[in-house]
Image (cartoon, rainbow over all chains, first blue to last red; front, side):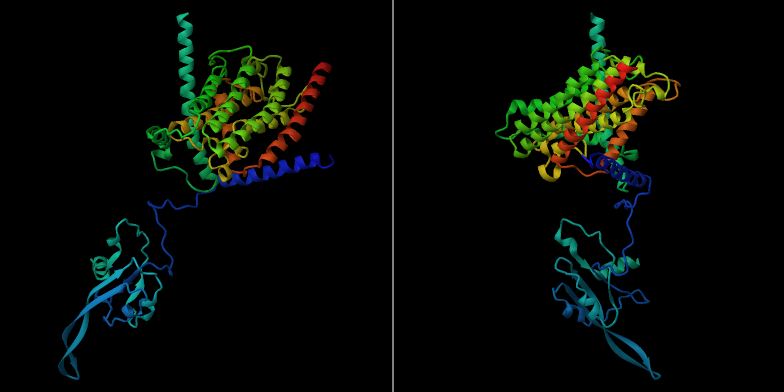
Amino acid sequence: MGTYFSDIIRGLWSLLIGLSITFKEFFKPVVTVPYPFKTIKMTERYRGHVELIENDEGKPKCVACGMCQRACPSGCISLASKSVSYEVEVKGEMKTKKKKVLTKYDLDFTTCSLCGQCVESCNFQALTFSKEYNLASSRKEDFHFDLLNRLKERNS
Amino acid sequence: MSLTIFNALVAVVAAIAFAALNAAYLVWAERRGAGRIQRRPGPNVNGPLGLLQPPADGLKLMAKQLTIPGGADKALFVVAPVLAMVPAIMSFVTIPFSDTIVAHSMNIGVLMLFAFASLGGLAILFAGWGSRNKYGVMASVRAVSQSISYEIPMLITVITIVMITGTMNLKDMVAAQAGGFWNWNFFPSFSSPLMPISFLLFFVCTLAETNRAPFDLGEAESELVAGFHTEYGSMGFGLFFMGEYANIVIGTSLMTILFLGGWNCPFGLYPGVWWFLIKVYLLIFSFIWIRWTFPRTTIYGLLNLSWKILIPISLFNLLLTAGLLKVF
């Protein structure tokens, strides 16, 4: 009986404290983002699927060495290239040189584990993580990305 | 004769419309309020401020099929949701919204309201028992023990009020509180010094009687799936929901009439239905506020609260008021 009334009073008081907290929260602004209408910017270190980086001319920086393809543990990168000859002036005379040009860079995102080995292995800083995250789809084909095409679309 | 039937019809239609509209839009208010308290917007996509959400929900519920589980007691299963809704609507008949807006003013209005209120417990018992579901049965056993133990302090408090006002007619009760807010039953007077405590007690009992959080043990999701309406889908579930919200409106109306002076203005200005509605909706807001503040109690805590705290205090208040009424 000794603590009967003090328990009631203390309990009631604690309930009032709880109520006052929620009452204050009621008038504070909302903190959520109404997702489909508004999106937040992804952080610097967010890992989306990989993306090609362009050089100053808008062409991929990639030299088609194939390091990323070999580094990939899931084997989800497949690229192709062709040789192109071009003329360059060396010490006053014109010389014909050859270089590889990327013709295809396919990423099979269904097996990609986002480990980042491809980005790390690239010696030409030609690969990066995209900030893409709206990637839901019901079809498998939607996850086979043609990165060369994506680069072209980004530039156009 | 034909006039009275017409009157009754109008009253019933108005009561159903009011109950249904309130039920629909209190769900919206509840969700918006919950959102605000949890610092998110709540439903805001359908229509301005999400105001078209209730009709959308209603259409969805109506479009669904009402399945009756195998082995269920078909009659009880079908009757239960109706029984949850009908007493709630019937109770509106005797509630005076203002001096003139009352369907049927009865001498025994309070008695009738509590008779119908106890039918709600029966609906929950039917639903849980009839659906042949262990969670349903457990929930209905809980709900019945809850409604029995909370009706006692509630009725004792009402008896106190009836002693003070000397009438069971709700309209006369409000009339007795006319004037300013100092005349309301909520405020202590010489003959009833414990009235604020009485109000608090009645408030807690109403929360428990309407199965609202933190006393919603009949539908404790965390332990009983959905409690007594686990097996209900479609409009069966919809009726339980509407019944619950209609009961909230009745409970808050009753609080307004018994303690807060009904349609009287706190300063004696422009008494009318608007004051009644303002008081009712403020009380409903406090219900929503409480629901999204406190976690659910245990069944032991619930019964302890009633039998060890509410009933002794309400009995003490009854005796004190009776004694003081005799003295003054």
